[in-house]
Image 1 (cartoon, rainbow, N blue to C red):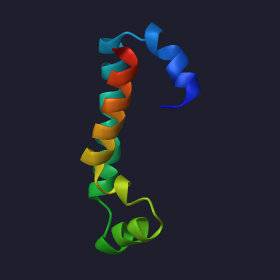
Image 2 (image 1 turned 90 degrees about the horizontal axis):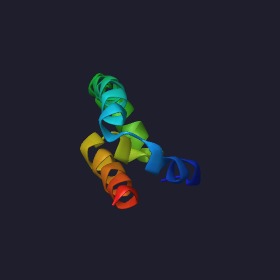
Image 3 (image 1 turned 180 degrees about the horizontal axis):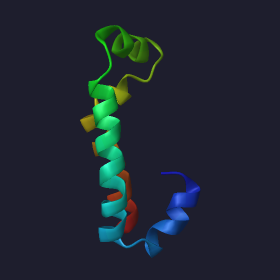
Image 4 (image 1 turned 180 degrees about the vertical axis):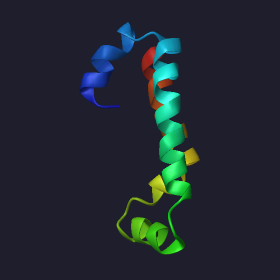
Length: 70
């Protein structure tokens, strides 16, 4: 989590944050799902393969957010 978000985290309402993030996450998931195998391979080759595995990327973010909120 970047320093700016760390500073803001204590002021964020979890329900409102979730409501704002979920639709955006769904759009990213849909975009990734629409990529061709070649495009996905290019992302992996570029070193950002985690984007293709959205669940793993999301789990990392959830762990970071929970660590700050706890």
